[in-house]
Amino acid sequence: MRYRHYKGGIYEFVGEATLESDLSPMVVYRAANGTLWVRAKDVFHEMVEVDGKQVPRFAPVDE
Image (cartoon, rainbow, N blue to C red; front, side):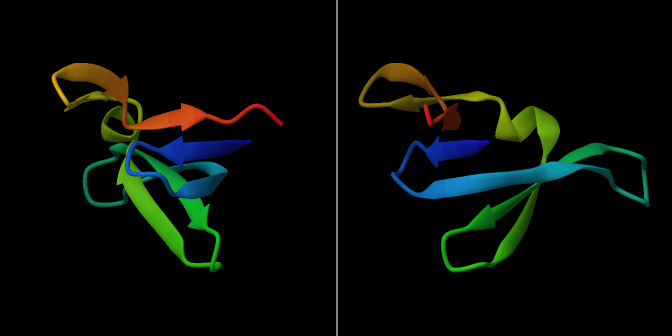
């Protein structure tokens, strides 16, 4: 599945992972250039404020 970051980038969901140090749930995702990123699952799915409106940090892209 692909997601659009609220700033415009498109990222591919790779999977979920667990942070070893404290067992926090994480999301692993890939940028268009192949770079892998990891973000806390709750942060990946949170809402952020843009121009006074709440929008998802990452929104699913219809394929």
